[in-house]
Amino acid sequence: MNKDKVGILYLREIKYSLRDNSLRISFLIPILITALFLIGGGGKRLIFGLNIFHLLIIILLIDAEIYVNQFCSIKEELRIYLVLPFSRLSLIISKNLFSLSFILLQFLVITSTFLALGLFETKAFVKTIIYFLLTFPVLIGFGNLISIYLPRGFIEERKKQAFFSSFFFPVLSLIISSGLYSIFSIFSSKINDLSRLLLIFSLLILSLGIYYFLLKLAVGLVWKKRFYILEKI
Amino acid sequence: MNAIELINLRKEFKDVVAVKNINLSVKEGTFFGFLGPNGAGKTVTIKMMVGLLKPTSGQIDLFGFDVDKDEIEHKRKTGIVLDEPLFFEKLTGKEYLHFVGRMYDLDKKIAESRTKELLEFFELQDKRNKFIETYSAGMKRKISLAAALIHNPDLLILDEPFEGIDAVSSKLIRNNLELMVKKGASVFLTSHILEIIEKLCSEIAIINLGEIIFKSTAEKIRDEVSKEKYSGLEELFLSLVATGREKESLSWLV
Image (cartoon, rainbow over all chains, first blue to last red; front, side, top):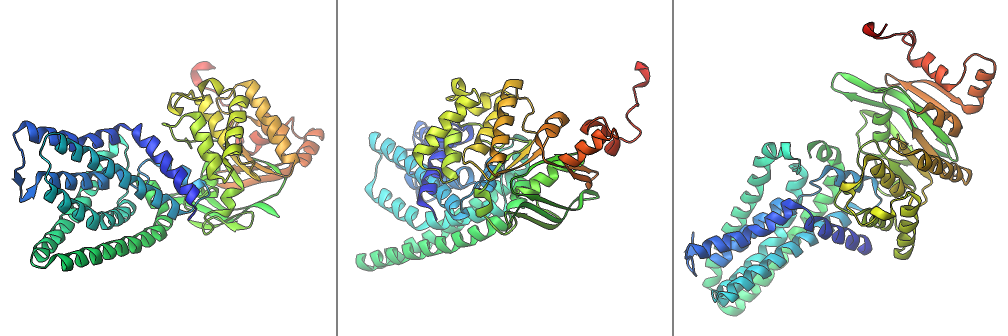
């Protein structure tokens, strides 16, 4: 992997995405939901057993998988990437780093909003950070694969066709990860602090390991499936 | 060494065979013209050559590297202009050229200076900070050409590069392409402007209905012309691909 090229690709991704209407709109979604929730007098209430802060981060993760982690969602982009000399690993890493930046930035916005409105709860925040750390690497790893097997284009007329494939798998993977996290929460509430810390650390290593495995898989697959992706987006 | 080697290259689209097992070699330092009427298989061949279309069968080697297996090396040596967009619409011309230069491993300063020079050469300096999506068709073609040239490639694959480009720029580009070939680079060019092919190319192949029906050097073609067999490349081309159709006309115009 060439670090220089990862940096160049990452910067291009940022520039391009800030100029893309779909991404700009998706960036606003969690903020809009926060606003709607507050207008509705939501306060610190729980929804589906989840603190609103936690819920927003989940929405954010769906967002990241659907809108950001689209491996080459624009045909021209993929064409350019296929004719330029750099490794697939550099490309996927740059896209994943961008996804991370995108979600962290939104995380910051939501946290600041909650702080400013006096709705911030340290316990909910810590829980969300743990959830985020444990699930993000796995989700983004699966996101890479989903984007290869179910490439999603931004082309207007294909959006309808791609709806099911766009939303189904990211949402499914998120439901599974939330379920696993719930099991973790229940289990971790029954053990002491040191054991809990060790468990979190072990799960984090496992999560990063899964990401690494899925990344390797995606790097191999994207070359094999390049014509299929080109055809679909 | 051959810059391009097409071995039994074939492309089928459902019931249509777009390219029928063609074999073609282009030596390094050759200005190669690839001609054919619309739908002959030129663009399909080029797309397979640059790795954007999967051949049904056959092999493509660029500088000895199998395009299907080698991911990076042959690309470092190649510059490409396609008949469809190959740029990021929401980057400015300056940003895009700089990005391409850096992806071709150019040092930051060199990428910057070449970007500047290319923008001036293609008369795009006034539009350098505008998004490419705001460019005219000719300007988009120019930015594609500029991107193909930024790394001083050993092989240029150009599909209709002069389309929409004004006469002055076209002449300047042609001069520079000739200069590149003199220095040892190869150019693989398709163009509907037969005059350009005739003037520039040292070797010419004609493809029709997916088959290469003619391949010769410019020298031999000139010999044929001097023997008064044909008045020029245009007549030769027409005799091969438009047999019997030259005098057809619309009924209401007769």
